[in-house]
Amino acid sequence: MSTQTTTSAGAVSLAARGGARPRYADNKPAWLFLAPFVLFFALFLVVPTIYMAISSFFNTSIAKSGLGSFAGFANYQEMLTKREFWDDMWHTLQFTLYTVPPLVVLAFVFAVLANRVRRGQWFFRLAFFVPFILPSATISLIWVFIYAPGNGLFAQIQTWLGNAAPTPVLADPKTAMVGVAIATLWWTIGFNFILYLAGLQDIPRELYEAAAIDGTTPWQQIRYITIPLLSRTTSLIIVLQIIASLKIFDQVYLMTSGGPGTSTQTAIGLITNTAFTDFRSGAASAAAVLLFIVILAIAAIRQLIERNQERTA
Image (cartoon, rainbow, N blue to C red; front, side, top):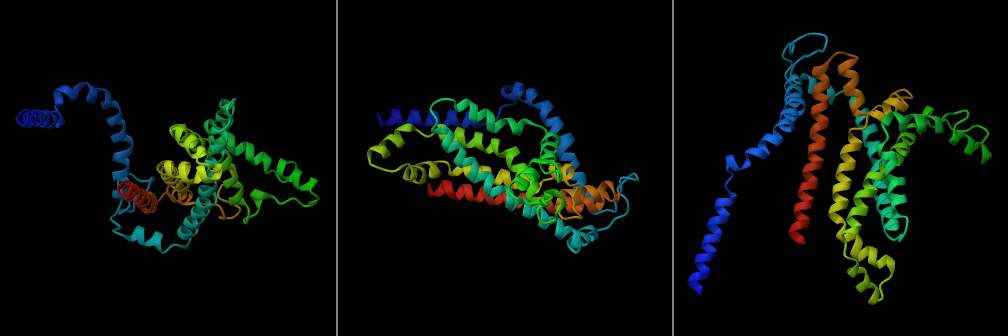
């Protein structure tokens, strides 16, 4: 019996090792189907990224052909010592702080509430997700009308509340970024809502029923069952949201064009202006590489946290 078991285990082990070896003939159809994606991935992502990293060390300009003269680390030194770069990074961080916490917390709360609704859940899925599928130009136009100083909805509400001089949200440097953040909140919360709702529906209802029999309150069920079991979804949403916020450009460009003054200009705005207004794509590439390093660091931290959670689970 022992010999048979050992032999079977050895055969299974050999089969497993044999199966683990990649065989090109077996995988050929898969590679053929993946080839178009790999080609486009290399042409439109890998090659431009490599070119960006190389051109950051040259005085490259979109007005001239070629890489231009070698600049070494001068472009990086210029960006790291430039006040405008740090101001725009701060504006980007501001936007991230304004959007990430509410987009995570509110999406979670709304998903928990919608998950408890027995009938008509499809309506909440539709209502939350429809804004997300609209283009950024449409969202920006809607909110520019809402924030319009004279006859916008926000100005009308302030007038009804007795404010004779309504605050022009997008025209005030103190509130312009908040206005863009609120528009983004309404636009993108549906994506996180759907992720949380999918996670909630994977949690077995027996856990809640057993907890209810033990006399736990709804809040205790959320605290000790829902939140721990959705921890991986939450960490994924936080990282995706931070990365998306660090790349903010569309809404700012369409709603404020970086103004008033430069109060809402973000890192991507600086990169765009440097490349396409100043025609200095080498310096813009250096700023893009610095932003890329920040995003890469956040993704690496998230990966380390996830591995740590898996070890402690």
